[in-house]
Length: 155
Ligand code: CDP
Ligand code: MG
Image (cartoon, rainbow, N blue to C red; front, side, top):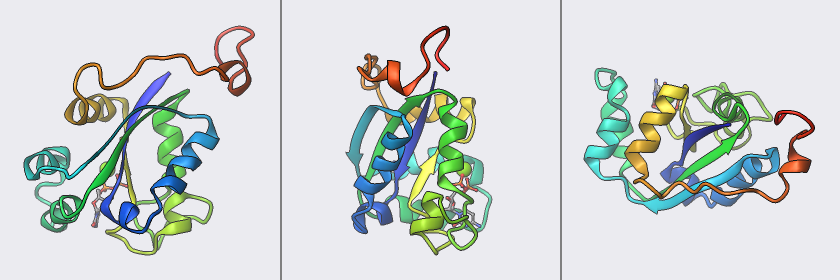
């Protein structure tokens, strides 16, 4: 089981797509294990995206991410990090394939609705940035025996 950090960005909240985006992850079989709405503090946005600090789009990205509230969600499931990145589609809305979240709902390259961790290392780091100890829940989903084949290991 992997846990990934997603952020429904300000455009996702403002365009009232938060519910639809979360629904797609739930329908896939991912479990919501943490959630909070917040206005991202400047310093947190800068840290979250520090790998991009030297990129020309960085100031605009930080401005965008701190401009309005976001919905921060921790999602858990088998291969969750890879599965979620595939569900997002390519970074630029104009290039994302139909059927992906960005492909279906975004045409902008910068305003692309949702962030998701891109590796296990990034997920661990980002979960630690946005959630305090105990805010990500460990619990049993009652439908696990139908969402997964539990005859041996979860598969
Ligand atoms: O979000 P993702 O991991 O797909 O892309 P990224 O390369 O890590 O970039 C982070 C975010 O910066 C993107 O989701 C875009 O919102 C923004 N960005 C941009 O505005 N212009 C670019 N040329 C690249 C990224
Ligand atoms: Mg990224």
